[in-house]
Figure 1 (cartoon, rainbow, N blue to C red):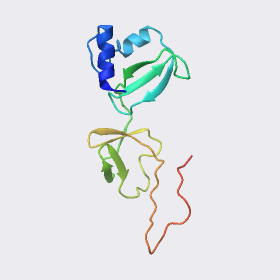
Figure 2: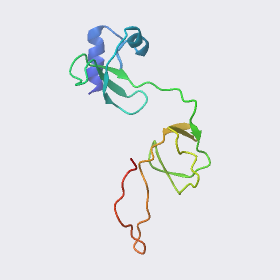
Figure 3: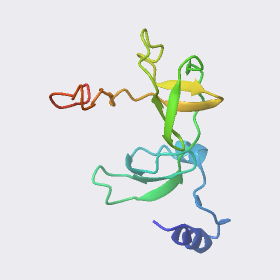
Figure 4: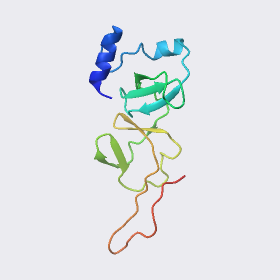
Length: 138
């Protein structure tokens, strides 16, 4: 979707325009909305497409992805990370007795991250080539 579309949709409704011209999450709760999440832009302030049916074909509307309160994020300050791109961290070295196991969120240098252990790095050098295929844990 385009921001221009959202601005126009808000203008047509007579609401101050911006990326989210809904009446907000509290109003949605007050209305007793029950529905489905159809699309997610995975960031705070990103757009969500919601619908009233599981096929996402009726009652569709957009809301902004809200920030969430994190009380139980594990402190990862003692671990070394690489950052292949902004907002993404990978462990720079194996961490025995890793403090991240079983946690959904971690805090590193004042920022919160989702812990996702699907990626495993293996050594693959000419003297010691990796064998087999890598697969994410199930």
